[in-house]
Length: 389
Ligand code: PLP
Image (cartoon, rainbow, N blue to C red; front, side, top):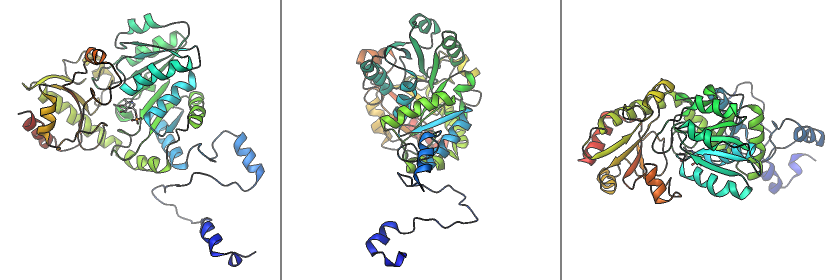
């Protein structure tokens, strides 16, 4: 039957789907906005399903996601990488890939509040036991280690108070006991720190942050050895955390400027921390580039190109400061945009923690987490100082 014999209804449903071959290629990868892939015959379908999983069929990834995975593995200098619908989906898949009922996990008590909630409330429901420690003190990790401990999970710069655990020493400690080190590297991005180079086995990211960089794409990522990524990929697919093609494509656009952005974020953050540390209305500044930071020396050695764009400020009166900024630095519960934003960990990112725990970890009602953008530093400091005044 020739095409002309079909009704307009059929023709509209099938229109244009066979792409013409073209000798040139688009310079920027197009969005593959398709959820499902067509196979020419059952043999090809069977070979793809039984194969290495690289053929797309449905919910097992997208071409744009695969491009982003190659980019993430290249940047993190790991064998493989996986992208997910959010940072939480990536952390869940990475940890559930290597943990089973009866296993034990040790985590830094200073990780992102929703990660704390995942480890504290969800993993025990699956029979996975969790102990929280202060990971800046390897002796605490050592004391918590049990025969069934499989994973130590940390953030290389913690959210929001920016402590800096000793990643190489913790990798050595975990490996000596037959365990794995998982590092959430969201706050520094591979432009400034690559945990796998220091022994980490799993590197996780909220791609929604610096990797995409413009607060317009949700995503997560895991980088590591190919066998660990394959385990995470199976969990991710079953848990339904696939990253959308559009978000992967948006992230690929943002990623092109990662190096430039991170340099500017880190330089501006250092300048903000230096100036505000001595401000009479600021009680405390948490930033690894200040000599007052408890791990200043270690951070200085591990991060030769800058630390992060994040600075935490304990101010005299947080509500008044936010009001006085008058939206010039918006209050927005995320981070890593090119424009500076403020968040309030007490009521958002660390809401799942009890008040006593928050205070013990330095998260007070007056602590604001400033995500320093790439604005002109004079303009930004002017806005912050005017609001403090
Ligand atoms: N890890 C860190 C350090 C974060 O700050 C966040 C979110 O703020 C996450 C993980 C979770 O990522 P997502 O919001 O993309 O799920």
